[in-house]
Image 1 (cartoon, rainbow, N blue to C red):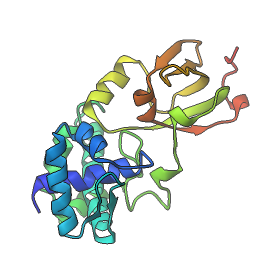
Image 2 (image 1 turned 90 degrees about the horizontal axis):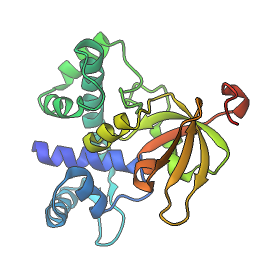
Image 3 (image 1 turned 60 degrees about the vertical axis):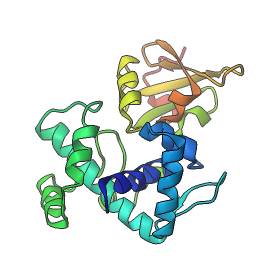
Image 4 (image 1 turned 180 degrees about the vertical axis):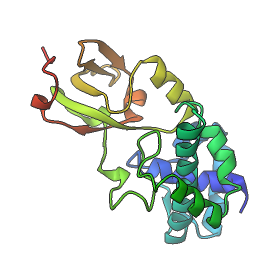
Length: 226
């Protein structure tokens, strides 16, 4: 299978665990390709039995597509762990290198690297590594944009997209950071959140859709909710 096809399967897997519906438009945006290119590839993948896809409908991985995508994602995320832990890559620049390495990684190398890293459960972006997560899945996470006001949350995962990761860094947010959801703004569905030290940040809906959280007991925060 070509690296391009592998990237499509991997990205469909990523979106499947990040949005309720995977569409041509979201794939085109994520992969920075044209809509006709996405359509052509999806037809090819469906013909080969890796996805189920009909125009204007959701895209889903088949059983064989899911199995292959999980292996690709596992390779990618394990390389990300190695690059950040051992070569000091930052989370916003590790993706492209890991993407190149995964295509050249066979099963023997994958298992050796996994053992060398002591079977990490999560990648640097907080996503579960398939097969290493002890029964956990990314589906347990909530999308920040869907959390109601006056609820404290912890950032547990962020979407693995270079453009978003650069922006996330500029916002001075971090994994495992606690936030209070203050208000949803009806005009454009943007979101106001507050950090524990009182800093308020306005996030677009697109940004909030790329941040995944878990609700926490308000009393478990440091108390800076006033």
